[in-house]
Length: 135
Image (cartoon, rainbow, N blue to C red):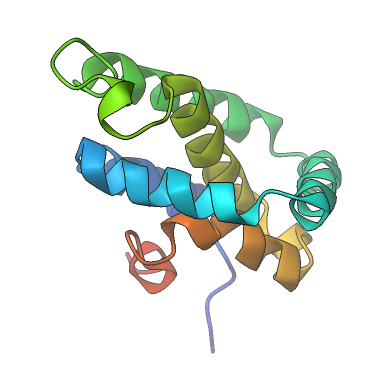
């Protein structure tokens, strides 16, 4: 019998994998997101807001948002060592696209599948979804 979806596990594993990416890998996700942004993206984002409300996973969201912020504080991304000018993007863009993907994982079982696919797409090749569903 298949296990029930564990959004908290997937989000936690995503954050662990995110922390291993280098700036150039993060750039791949950001530039993929740039290609996706449009009305369909905003529809997916609106569905994510509804999914977060309906899932009642606010405590988990808050915990993972804190961890996400910590990852961005600790990494050399977007510092004088690795400035965003190297990839043509800001840290705000990186945090937004990573946070959106992480929240989509957390509420995946409440999101319409096409919306989940869109919101996770920027990281789909860097952090394959099947790797996040295993213990």
